[in-house]
Image (tube, rainbow, N blue to C red; front, side, top):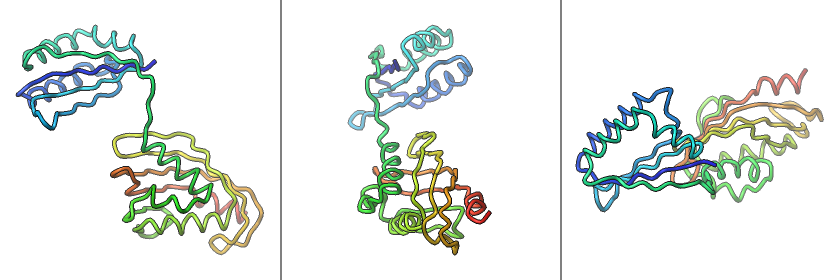
Length: 228
């Protein structure tokens, strides 16, 4: 079970604390077991800081705390704090990556399912799209509707989402597309052939909606399957 620790403290020397955290990261390279760290500052009290550190498990967290570098950094951290930091240990019982869920919603509900009404719920109105198959970027969520409609007219298809990676505001999806050619596509009359295409999509989110997208797909491979 994944494990998280909340460290709550006060300090008027955040810049020094920030440098101390950089020092800990540098000194524990290849040894630390922490996988993710997030530090937040209380909007109503600049001296109030909360850090959330994530580990694969409680046992891994204990290994991390036993590193000599961790103990030294902790002593230096206490010296910078107004009082002793408090620690809250948490077993992670539920996690939901909301941007990841929204990204999946596009592939399954909009692209495959054809629910174009959901586009405005998922994409920003000034969405910017970058596609290796297009000479220039396009702007506006209407382009997503047009693209989806065009692909759905040309193919019956599904997406298999092989892997999704979330980092910050970005969701990266490695996918496999499988389609049956049923309508005109880039001047090619319907062939009835089943084709497979792989690709990667990066969606950048802002305020809960997809603000920008980058598409890298094996379009040349798809064309060879349709014309070969």
